[in-house]
Amino acid sequence: MGKPPNLYAFQSASELAPSLRAYILDAQNSALDRHQVFRVAVSGGSLPKTLAQALLKETNGQGRVQFDKWEIFYADERAVPLDHEDSNHRLVKEELLDKIPAELGTPKMFPIDVKYLDDIQELADQYEKTLVSVFAAKDSVRLPMFDLLLLGCGPDGHTCSLFPGSELLRETDPWVLSISDSPKPPPKRITISLPVATHGIKIAFVATGGGKKDIMRQIFDTDEGRQLPCGLVNAHAQERVSWFVDYPAIEGVSSPARRGNL
Ligand SMILES: O=C(O)[C@H](O)[C@@H](O)[C@H](O)[C@H](O)COP(=O)(O)O
Image 1 (cartoon, rainbow, N blue to C red):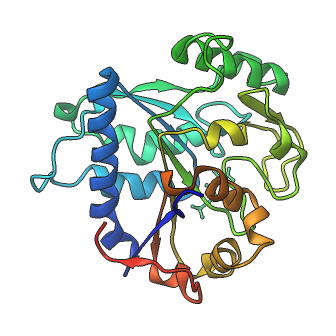
Image 2 (image 1 turned 180 degrees about the horizontal axis):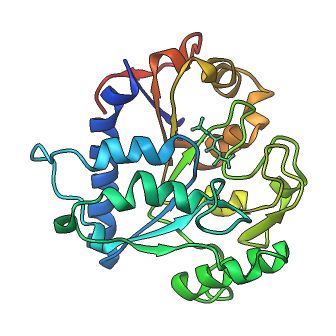
């Protein structure tokens, strides 16, 4: 048995940001040592804003965010145009990309190909092809290995667009899945599969606010919660997972959390 996921708790989202930054820089620097590129998958929700707080501030001697070496993929995306209000790409662009100072460089972005918006399975297949083109052929690597996945946790325990009880959670072959009846709107989405989500070198969840306290307690303290999508990521990836949370989100969680610094 491996070690359990890391749980780092902070007074507030803004106090969490410097530690999230240190964690991301560490992941970036080891990825650059390994293969001169930093491959990251991100979700939507409140995460892009928190990332901006963590990454766009002064460096404080913690090292430089080398955005020109970043390749950013979407852990999940909604089947809408890239400038649509529901688009995760739009959110990441507005909250983070558009605010990156020129001297930090520009990440290479991998948005969905909107040519295929009318055919959700094709949209997923095409995104998988994008991953294949970056991570090598599917028959040579079993799964794409992101250097870092940055994920959110929904109030129902969903992550990416993998929802509780969904049959997609059992899919082991496709890297990217389509969903046309998401319980949370919009209904049509694509998402990386659970095996891809848990194969990352590092996986971070960011969950803040009192609205998360019930689901956090379930995920960390109950057997049912461990079967929820976020709980399954914890179970499969163990110590490769780190949770960055604020105190309101873990009120009532009995699993030990490290308060403050990494
Ligand atoms: O498409 C989605 O449903 C979101 O991208 C989702 O995966 C998000 O990450 C969580 O719902 C957490 O959202 P918050 O961070 O806003 O609570």
